[in-house]
Length: 181
Image (cartoon, rainbow, N blue to C red):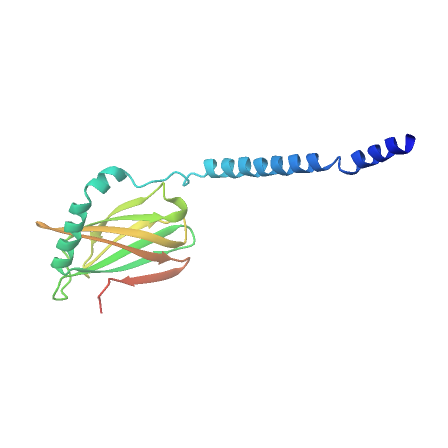
């Protein structure tokens, strides 16, 4: 009888750790998920959405009409974004009409959005210079790719353009408009 009891004791002691191993594995997964949630919830850009995105979706037909009207104008932007190491930058936009002439009398507003800091877009009104270029200093906290949204107005004409431009430290990036030569 003692041999039978010792066999039962040995068989019970061999697998005693399996339930604890499985339970600790599941707890480890829960712990990792809690850490991932905490990191995601603490990211300032984690919950960034387009401002008034519902209105933007409802106005989609108007946006398509605005794109068509902008294309019909034939205006072309040439964008230069320079960023210096200290974070100060300069945005320059050259606008030409369909015949290639500079549009010096247009009012140009720009919005720059960096993916790393999408919660804080940079908005600026560009001033027209003597060379026909519209420019303004801009605070650029980050190097890299920026989304650029331009709105230019001249009289009753309104031109909208969305593109991307790279700003590298002590570097200049030029993005010609699609179809520009």
